[in-house]
Image (cartoon, rainbow, N blue to C red):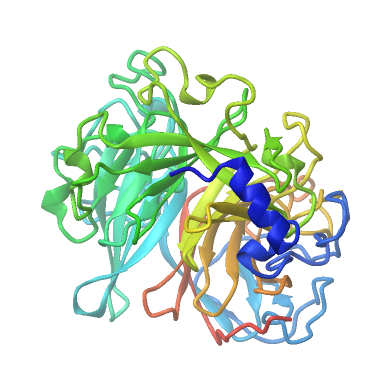
Length: 502
C-alpha cells in the first residue's frame, strides 16, 4: 500500500510541517558546517593534515588540535603518525591486517588492491571474518593485483574484481582467501541478517564491452563461513542490473534497499519486495527467478504534496519527505539503463547515492555531494534516514560546501557509513584533499576519528586516498576500515566510549 501525497500532507499538518513524524528535527545535523537553519553553503571550522607510510603504531602523546577543539565530544585531537599511515587520537592504536602487494592469500597470491566495502562477522573459535570488496573495473590486464581466478569461484574470467574473506584469529594470525572472483567494480555492498555478504557491482558493462565476456551490474551473495556455498557464483538478477553501490536488508519486512551511484541522469534509490511465499536465508536469493519480486524506484514529495525531483533541494536538516515506490519497467536494462527508463516527474534522483547501513529500524543513506549536475543547491554531503514503517525520508546530516579541502577545512564527501555501537554514526570520507573518518553524534556534533596520512602524490602536490569499508567487529571493540589505494585494511582499537549528545 503506497503512502499517497494526500495522506502525507494530512499527517504533516497534524504534526507540524512533518518534522515530528520521525522525532526531533536536526538529529545528527553536523556542526559547524551544517546547521538545521542554515544554507548548505555555510563553511566550517579547520582541521590538521599529514603524510607518509608505516605499520602497527601506537598513537599516544599530544598532537595538534585540528581546529575543532575538544569539549567532551569525540576523542580529542588527532596525533600525527610517525610512520605516516594513520593519525589517531591519543591512546588509540592501529594495525595493518592486509596490504595489497605485500600480504598474501593462503594460496600464495598477493592481496588484491583497491579495498572497498567491508563487513565483519563472528567467526569460529572467537575469530572475526571480514568480507572485503575490491573495486577493480575493466579488463584484468590493467591491474597489478586483481582478485585471483580461484577455480570454481569465477563468474567472468575477464573481470578483475571480487571479494576476499579475511579471518582474524584470536592469536592475531590473519588468513585471507578468495570469496568470489571475476566480478567488476565491487563497491560498497552490504551484510545480511542471516550472516552473508551482498557484493555490488558498480558498473553497467555488458558482454563485449571493456573486454567482458558476461553482463555485469549485478549483486552476488558471498558466504564468509561456507566456502562451498560460493562455488559457481550466480548474479541475483531479481535485484536488477545497474551501477549498484550499497544494499541493506530490512530484517522485519524482508525488503532490500539499494543505492545507485550514477549520473546523466542522477541515480536512484531502489526497493526490492520479495515474493509473498519467499523466505530469506543463506543462498536463497540466488535461487530466485530473474523477475522474482518487485523492483521499484523511490518518488518523494514534501509536506505540501509537491513532487521532489532531486534530494539536493533539501537545504535544512530535519527536512522530511514522504516516499512512494514506482515499478521498474525493465530491471535487467536490456536496451536502456534502469534510471533512464523513467520520464521526468516519475522518480526522485540524487547525486552519488553511496553507502547505506541498517540501524534504528531503518536505513541510513548517503548522497555524497551535489554540484551543477543537480537541480538544487550545491552541498558536500547528505545523510538521510528512511523509515519503512512511516515511509518517510529525513535529512539527518548536511555538509556545506567545503571551500578549501586541501587545507584546514570541514569534512566533505561522505561515502561508506556505519552505525556505531557507541552512539551516532561513523562516516568515511571520499572527498577532495584530506581524507578522514569522522563521527556524528545523535544530536549533531561531528568529531574526527582518523586521518589518512599515506601520501600517494608528492610533497609539493600531496594526494590521499579515500577511506572505505568502515565497520565494527561483532564485539564492538575494533573499528575496521580501509585505505582504498593501494589497498590497506586497518584495525583501530582504543578507549571507545559512549558519545554524549553534545
